[in-house]
Length: 98
Length: 135
Image 1 (tube, each protein chain N blue to C red):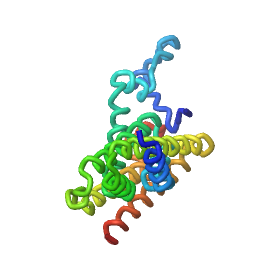
Image 2 (cartoon, rainbow over the protein chains, first blue to last red):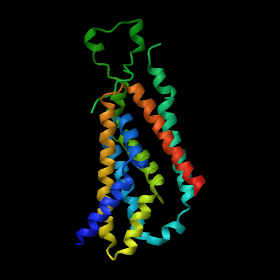
Image 3 (tube, chains in turn red, yellow):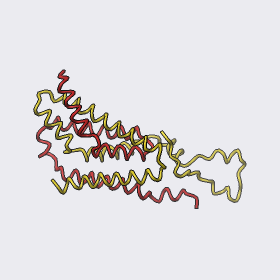
């Protein structure tokens, strides 16, 4: 086991990921969700799979994936989540006493 | 973890308006959400997992962390060591994120929290769109 490389990759990724989009998403989603454990599992699984694909496909990822399209879809997803939080659906107002 | 009781959805029996039930029976009414979770406990959890997974995964694909990881794994001859280090770092940062979120949730009112979280998600969407436009 190359401990130097292990430590180097841990520190590099840890520092570049601190305060990054996915961590902000984890903060926002866990604060507003009732099941923070699922948010943790969801973000961890997503990040692991993304870096797994990075290692697996290696150099070809950049040409392999239409990064812009993927990011656009992700942006739309975040907007939907934000809208659902900022303007809760009529479901919740139905239950409120009139 | 604080349970948010934004709306206590105690659904009253519509019959009880005309025909009040004895108190012993009235106390057996279950809040609608608790009932939903009891009948199908997995689906709301899976929904949280699914939406979190999908959005974060898509946002992270082709992001700088992934680029760092693949650069390092290409330079070294031990890609799995890089994956192990990167994976441990990513799990740690997402744990810290969830922990900070819970910490904020414990001292801010649910309404403020929802507004703040919504704003934060919009900022993330804007950052992603910035990436799309910029390159």
